[in-house]
Image (cartoon, rainbow, N blue to C red; front, side, top):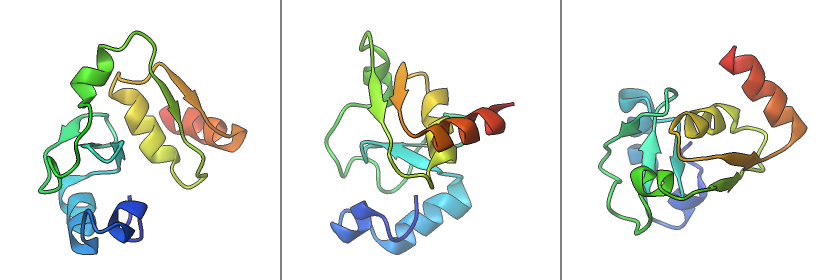
Length: 106
């Protein structure tokens, strides 16, 4: 997550909110702009929560086979955190991301 994210461009969140969540709360990513999490995959309650309607991480965990798609090569840490939430069973991404995630998780 960064202050240039698509969610900021859409006006959902301000750059200040993104920076504050990252620096002060340890947020590294989100799942569908709804639930924010840290590097350990734990939910982080932010001022941005509840502005977007969607399924929570707890609700996503109940889906038998959850597939995530992540294309950006700058999001490996966020992908690792998302995997650690336990809500994702399969992730479709680049070989570079996979190598980076494997190196970070060891």
